[in-house]
Image 1 (cartoon, one colour):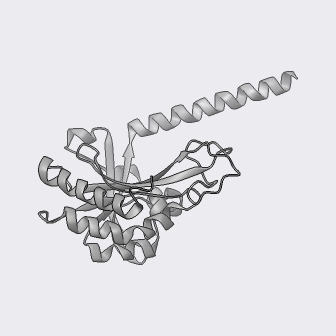
Image 2 (tube, helix red, strand yellow):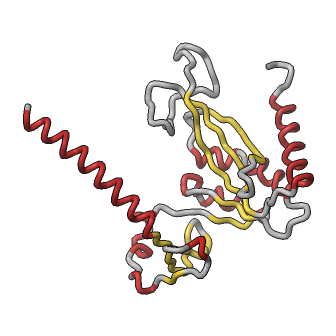
Image 3 (cartoon, rainbow, N blue to C red):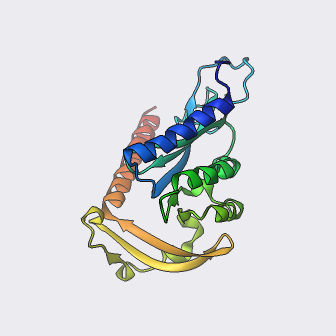
Amino acid sequence: MNAVDEQAIRKIETALSQKLVEEFGIDARCLCFDCTNFDTFIDSRTTSELAQRGHAKSKRTDLRVVGLALLVSTDFHIPLFSRVYPGNQPDSVTFRSVTEERIERYRLLAMNLVHVTLVFDNGNNSEQNLEALVPSRYHVVGSLVPTQHQDLLEVPLDRFQSFEDTRLEGVTAFRTSKKVFGREWTMVVTRSQELLDGQLRGIAQVLRKCRRALSELQAR
């Protein structure tokens, strides 16, 4: 493993990303950034900077995890940037720590593009993180925690509009603007009947489990 150090791995990854975009025509106009982690089975007594106890995506609490940040094209889901990090590091901190490298990757991938849009979830939200993206000229699509924006949740459904695009069948949306994280943003609140049905099924399943557990407790 010492034959190829971290700096060499990053150079290889950069060259591969550029080659993929140039040679195979990977569409880099929309890129998704996300952080995840994976379980390790390293002995707890083994010293490790990366393997740490954190919020495991697998829901296991008995293992140390290693974090993985990925920047992926929506076209064929090709990883164009990756970084491993300690498993106890929050997503928002990871987002901030790799911003400069992502900006460099943006300049590399956007050589022949006018616009590149970066998509990420609300785990990466912070005023500092969004401000750091300004020099990159990325367009940004993020998400918000619904319970933190009660005014948007109270918009009546008759103000929502449907879409002509068949890929968005069953989805309606309300568009407005609002100041969040120190800047004015376009807000799109969506409602999906399919997503709602799935959530209701999930709630019903949890209720069935709870009632079954209570019945067993009552019987004892």
